[in-house]
Length: 270
Image (tube, rainbow, N blue to C red; front, top):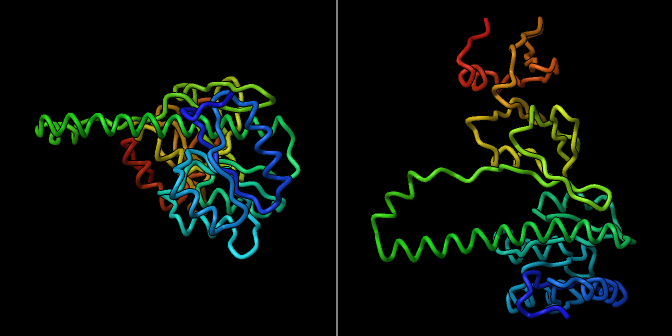
C-alpha cells in the first residue's frame, strides 16, 4: 500500500469524477505514491495545494470557472508542486510547458503514457527534494559558521552530467560528455551524439541554463554546440553565420550570438 511518507504525494484535480477515479486507480498501484487529496474545480485545487502541500499535481486544464492555467497563476509558478497537465485539448500542450508543467497527459491516455509522465515527474520531485535537503544543510552549517557564507560564493554550480531519455517503456541515460550539439524541434530537444540522436521533452532555455558554459555555448535560439566540437566558423555572403563541427555537421549561428561565440573560441571572423 502507498505510504504517507511516499515521495510522490499526489493531488488529483479534475472536474470529471471518472477521470479522478482513473488516476486514483493508476496511482494505487504505484509503490512510492500516495493520493493526498482530490479537487473538482480550480478554487478547491488552490486551497488543497496550499493546505496539503503535495509534491505532485495532476491538473486538468479545462474546468468551469477557473482553468488549470488559472490555478498555476493563482498559486504562483515558484510555489507550484511538480505538475502534470491532464487535458483533452492538444492545443494546451505548449501552454502547459510555458507554465513549467513537467509533462501532460492527453485524454484518453493509456497506462504506458501515464507511466512515462510519472517517471518524468518522479525524477523532478527527487531533484527538488535533494536540492531542498542540500539547502537546509547549508543553512544549518552557515548558522554554525558564518564564514561559510563567503565560501559559498566560490562554490561551482551543479551542471548536468547525464540526461534521462524516455522511450518505449524504458529509459536511457545519455552522458553530457557524449553530446556534440543539441537542436530544438518544437517542444522537444534533440540530443546529438556520435551514436545517434535522442529526443527529450525539454526546452532549449532550460538545457542551456543547466549545461556547463565552459563546455557548451548557445549559438542560436534552436541550437547549442559543444565548444570543443567546433571545427570552423563559416560566414555566408549575406552575412549569415554557421559553424561546422568535427563530424561535418553544419549548425546555424544567429547574428546576435556570433560575438559571444568568437570570444569563447578566441577567434575573429573577418
